[in-house]
Length: 240
Image (cartoon, rainbow, N blue to C red; front, side, top):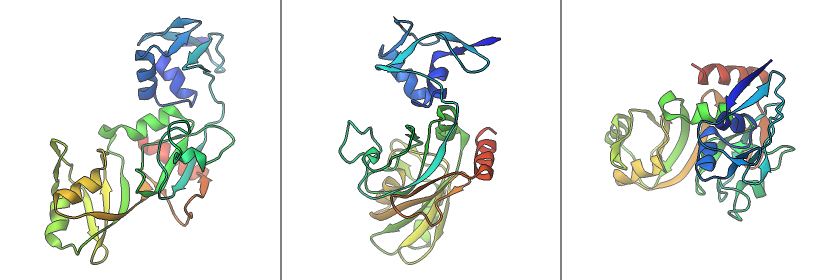
């Protein structure tokens, strides 16, 4: 028995990249199916055991499905960027090494640190990153001057940035200049922009949770695979 799978889904399930990124490569003409340039919506035949006689090449790489899906929690250190190894000398891939290639789920900018999920499961990555799914991400943030109840309230209610207003979120003061914030969206440099709009500058930003996965006591540069219970709960939550 076999089924027909959309080319972007097939590439995503190989762990090479997310479905969104696969769409971009297809639109740029960088994907071929048996030597023919693929177009959006193309499908290929895949056997029930996951094998496929069709040769799919994405930007010079032969696409093959990975049998084992891996999800890793990585504590991204300061100074590293979420880019490809070839694109930037400060790429996380110059420091993060794993037996198979894993893609990062979402980004942390160069000046931020903490929890970064890494996986070869493109479908899972896609589900986590879709903003409409409203999955939680929690951060510890420190700013350059004391915060008050007005600051907390404005952050919670939504701040005008990037021609929109951020969604309501949970913000709790931890000390004079430190707070935690739980977001369900992922606008570009969102927390920094929110603080800047209110007259504050972020001096420390660390992600400590994504969905149900906690950073815990991992040191910068360290990583660990999810436990079976963590993975099961993560998949249950993102598939809702």
